[in-house]
Amino acid sequence: MKHRNSDQSESLKRAIRGAGLRATPARIATLKLLHAATSPLTHAEVSNELRDLGVDKATVFRNLNDMASAGLLTRNELGDRVWRFELVTEDDGHSSTHPHFVCVDCGTVSCMNEIKLTAGSLRLSQEFGEVTEILLRGHCNECE
Ligand SMILES: [Zn+2]
Ligand SMILES: [Zn+2]
Image (cartoon, rainbow, N blue to C red; front, side, top):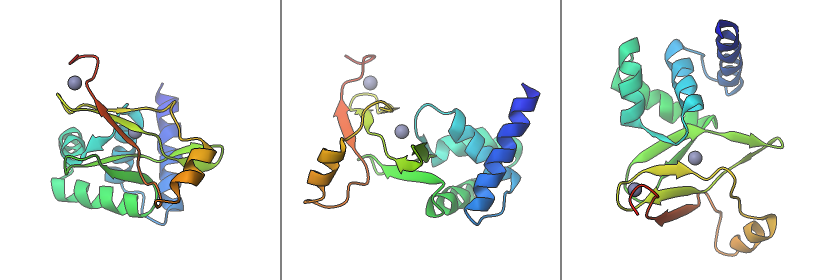
């Protein structure tokens, strides 16, 4: 377990440096947190988790934005004016975006990792513009 953790730190460090940023402990901790998360996290959620490590909110905010600009994270606004961050996922060497499901009752955001726009749909959607996120809204199973 310990071995796996240090392997993960090494690969996260490489990813951060590969994006042209310094691999600071706060950035590594942020990526670890997002790696373990099953849904995108808000700035407040990341701040809460990293507070025990002595990372202040302003640093968390700056790191999230820097890593999003560097292409390590995606930054989505899902209709509630709150930015949510998650790791960029690689799919056959291409970074791919997955749809999110937002519950209109409780606000829970879920990653729909298995659902994708087909290549044909993506091509058709270019008639309207570049798709940067796909959002589905409804009532989650907990709220139904
Ligand atoms: Zn719900
Ligand atoms: Zn997601």
